[in-house]
Length: 273
Image 1 (spheres, one colour):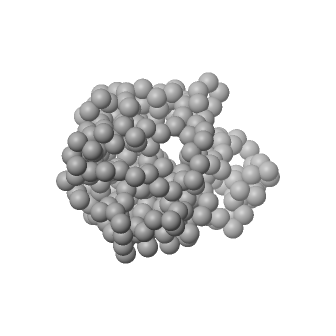
Image 2 (tube, one colour):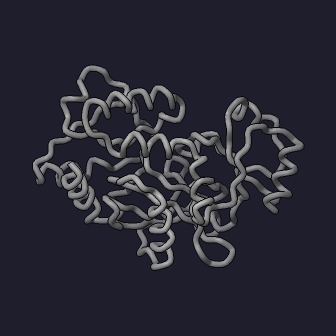
Image 3 (tube, one colour):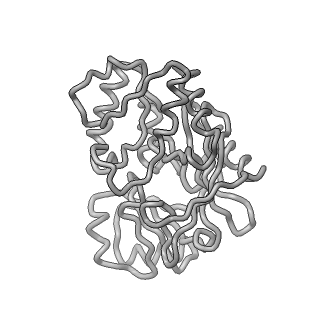
């Protein structure tokens, strides 16, 4: 994106390992038009953390890029992953996801019905096209002030999970289908958002066999090749794991949390191009 002020990112850690493999990196905004995308052997989507505000414009740019060179992840993957309706498709394939309702009208009557249907006194509501927890709300009661965020915009309704606050959210990272590393993201005191921009606390972890099995099952449901993938998991009431999101467009990769992760990403890029 044009301005990353206020965001945390560490993609630059992969630049030296890529150089060691003979690959030169340039960092450009997706909005730029000074350079021709055909000048590059490949374009890798990274910190485009404003795309959710301009999804059609973003897709139009990616279409131009893919016509000019190789795009990772591919435009087909981005189109599928852009709208969180993909969670319903994964659920229909047997992937255990966080219970989710796909809605279009935010009203007091619907709010009460959602609480009953999900069996939860507290709800999370967020747009189907979203990033960095923008327009994500944690609500116990209908709040008319939230209405503007969901006017003419489809959204998700999920139960608020105590495990997010009590334990956190796990992220597992894969490059070219191979597991790389894992982290735990915990919200700061009195918050529920795990992103660093909102004060989230990040720590490296060793992924358990159960986490890796849940992540691998989710990734296996995607038929397209993936240069990178982040699988976000939360613990369920039975002690297992359910999918929060499958991040295939512009996930923060937390390369700094594992000494070998930058080199793994560099090798994956070298292999795929």
